[in-house]
Amino acid sequence: MNKEPTIAVLIVAGGVGSRMGNDVPKQYMLVNGMPVIRHTIQAFKALPINLDIHCVIADGHQDFYKDAVGEILDNPPIIGGDDRQSSVFNGLKGLSTVMPEFVLIHDAARPCVSVDDIHNVIHSLMHKGAVTLAMPINESIQRGDETINRENLWIVQTPQAFKFNDIWQCQQQAKKDGFIGTDDASIMRHYGHDVEIIPCGRHNLKITTRDDLSMASKLLHNKTETRVGNGFDVHAFSGHPSKYIRLCGVDIPFDRSLSGHSDADVGLHAITDAIFGALADGDIGSHFPPSDDSFKNMDSHVFLDKSVDNLKAKGGRIVHIDVTFMCEKPKIGLHRDAIRDHLSHHLNLSTGRISVKATTTEKLGFTGREEGIACQAVVTIEVPYED
Image 1 (spheres, rainbow, N blue to C red):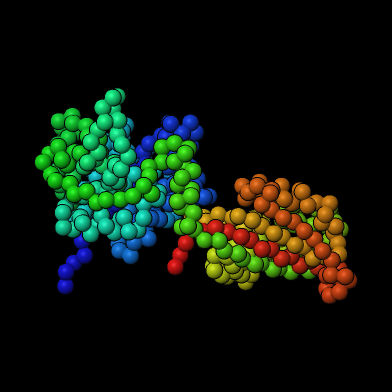
Image 2 (cartoon, rainbow, N blue to C red):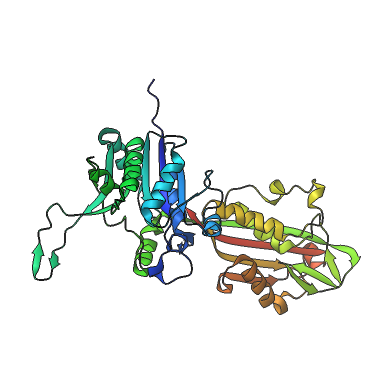
């Protein structure tokens, strides 16, 4: 039986993105609610083969990276150098301890690369040993008064892929010689290696300007899907006098509180269950069993944060929340804005994406008898498409 080749991927994310004019480097900016680098990583993770994926980041960007990537990669980031070539060198040096047979090197700022693109690179790599994606130039090229013959002119892209030993030896030699290439393929060619061109399209753009960011948003739109989750929770009023009742994290003046294993925040419980439901990820009881005393009297924000963390781990985001309380008392309308503001701040979500409503049950049922409160939440999320 033939052994599968070991293939590593270096995603180079060491740039500062100064041309963006933003405090956040471009590879960590959001496109369709998800950081650019995360889109890029997921493009490689979508392949049905085992790839050992590593990211090379700038020193000082560790917090940006942690927030953007979370737990989707097991490998810790590799700290890059002062420029792209030195960052790739550091990445290859990190991989030299495991010595994969092949390595793909890709710009983090190219999140629109497709699974087919990557597959074509890997397929050709097995036969050629050194390949790069590139886009043929179809427009007329002018330099001053001179029209340049565009035949055999290409815009070189990534990923570029090589036998690991070859690119590592060439990078080490370039460092000794002080040779600076325009990319990894140019270094290989400088030291006598042929690099095969694999045609690619305009979609594999490199994000450099805000116009690129807008274009990437359009190109990546069809790679996400919208899901809707429903949550429902009920809590009875306790028999103890109180000065407030807590709903969606807001303390509302009232002479009764709700009874429950945790803090009995019926609103946050419903929202949490809705998020878990949209993710098809169980429910609040499966994640926080009421039989576990460690959750007794726990702040329900902990439950909500867990559901949001699970959502982020899948590269998703909340699009809209619709909460409906069912009770005779207290009167929710007086506190609607406070609840929306609190949820907005806690979830980093615009109040325009949060609806809070209340209704009575016309004196019917346990809510009509003022025995407790029910809450229904509908949460809309956007997550990367999964077949």
